[in-house]
Image 1 (cartoon, rainbow, N blue to C red):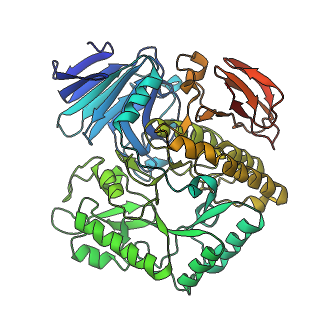
Image 2: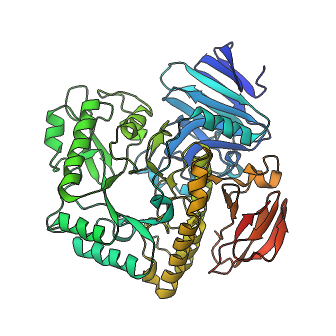
Image 3: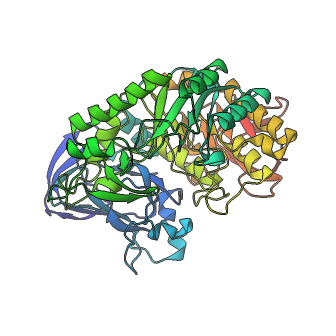
Length: 566
C-alpha cells in the first residue's frame, strides 16, 4: 500500500508494518505531508479555533499543551490529523514533537511568555487567507528520538474517526446528573474577590431564578496564599459551614487548585525541602512565572510528589466536606524545562498529572493522551466575544474537535466567557451563548444572567432546562462509544457543504443545533444534511435534508433546533 500524501521522511525508507486499517511506519524523525485539496480535522484545542484546519496557517513550533499559546496551541491536544478523503495520520507514543500546519513562510514563531500572550487571538494561529503558507503538515521529533506514525486509509472521514475511537479506551460516562443539571463557578463573575457571604447570596439566586443545578465551584482565591490548602480566615471564617450551606442547596462543591506553590504558601517550604518540586541543576527550586506571580512547580513526574499533593487535598476535602477540585494548569509548556531535573519532557507531564488525579470527575483544562481518564475536560478560558478567535463561535468548533479526538465529556468553558480585561458581556451575548451550548453534554455558568434583569434570567433558565430535557440523548449516546457532539458531516461524510460548517453541530444522529453566533442577527442560514427534519419547537413542517434553509427566523428568544426523524 502507498500513502500518496507523503512527501519526505527521515529516514527516507522507514520500516513499515500492516495493520487492519492501513500502515504503521517506524523510526521516523521527520515527516511532511502535502495537505492537498482536502478538508482537515483533528489536532486539538486552538486559541483561534478555525475549522476545518486548512483555514489556518500554524507555525512549526513545539507541539506542547499550552496556556494561551503564542502560536495558537491550547490545553488539549492529540497528534491526529485526518482529511475528508479518508486519510488519517496519527503519531504514536512520542510526546515531544514539533508540528506545523500550513506554516507561514515569513517570520518566526513567537515563543510563549506572558508578554507574547498579548498577540491578538485572531493571529494565534492566523487565517491561511492572511498569510502565505507552505501547504504541508510538518511533524518532527523535538528531541531526536524516533517516532511511529499510524496511517488510516478509509473511504471517508467518518470511517477514520470511528476507527480511531476503536483504538481508544474512553472512560465510562459520568453520573447522569452531569448531563441533567448545569454547573456553576465563581470565577468569571467574582475573580479573586470571593467570600462566604458573596457566594451564598449568589447560590441562593441560582435557586431563586429556577436553574436546575447540581455543582458549585469555588474558584480562586479561597485560600490564604496561592498553593496553600488553608482557607482565608477573613473571607471564610468557617469553611465547613460554607460548604454545608451549599450542600443544603443541593450543590456539590469543588475548589480550584494549581500545581504551583507561591513562596508564602504553607506548602512551599515542605515541598522544596522534600524534593517535591522541579529543581535547577544546582539543586535550588526552579521558580516559574505564572498568572499570579512566581512559584515553585510540583514535580508532576514524581509519583511520591503527586501522592503527597493529592493527600494534602484529601485532608482538606475531608475537613470541610469538599466533593472535588478544579485542577487548573498542568500544561506541558510549564514543565518543558531543559535546565532542570526533569528536562525537556514535552507533554509527558500533562499525561502523568491527569493520570494521577485521585478525585474522579474533577475539572481539568489540559490533556495529552488522557482519553481514558474519568475527568471533565474544560476548553481553555474563553473571551467575552463572539468569534472563532476564542469567543462564542469557538465553543462550537472546539467542541466538535475535542469530541472527534476522544474527549466527549468536556465543558465549553463558562457561558459568556471570562470577562478578562475590558471585555464585558451584553445581554444578547449571554443569551446567545446559553442557547449555543445548551444542547452540549455538560455546561457551566458564572456570569449571573439575573444581573441583566428578570427577562434575561428567565430566558437563560429556560435553556438550562432545555439542557436537562436533552440529557437522555447524551446518556444514551454515551453508551454507544461514539462522539456525543458531532459535525454535520457525520450524517453526510461526502457532502461538501456539511464538511465545512463550523457554527452548527449534531447531538448524536438525532438533533441538529444551529445557534446564532453573530451579534445582532435575528435569523440565520441553516444547512440540513441528508434525511428528513422538523423543528424541535414545531412538528408541523417537515424539511428535506441536503439543502440550505435561508434566513431561518431566530429572534433573541429562539434557538434553531431540529429533530432528525428519518
